[in-house]
Length: 121
Image (cartoon, rainbow, N blue to C red):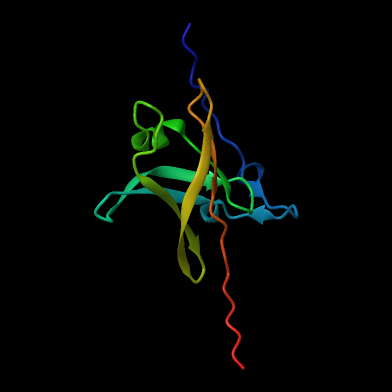
């Protein structure tokens, strides 16, 4: 038996996300593109992901990262996420990922966002 597509609607106030303090969060700040870098230094979009913590842990579809994995499970390209900030954007290398054996889901961690403060005397 095929599942049926249930039609309906959800009130706007019933959908969304909350931040750590319980305030409504803007999900567009959690979603980011994932890029691979080839041997010539060119970047290519391979998919998207979204942060699930404020320290760089994210979720993406497993098939997104299959684009950079060879038949032996080795990584073929450097991969990055691009975090959009109010002051611009930040490339963050993806350090490690773990995929579910069956489901199309991967959890990963990116390099930390580092803020550099220059002190002038």
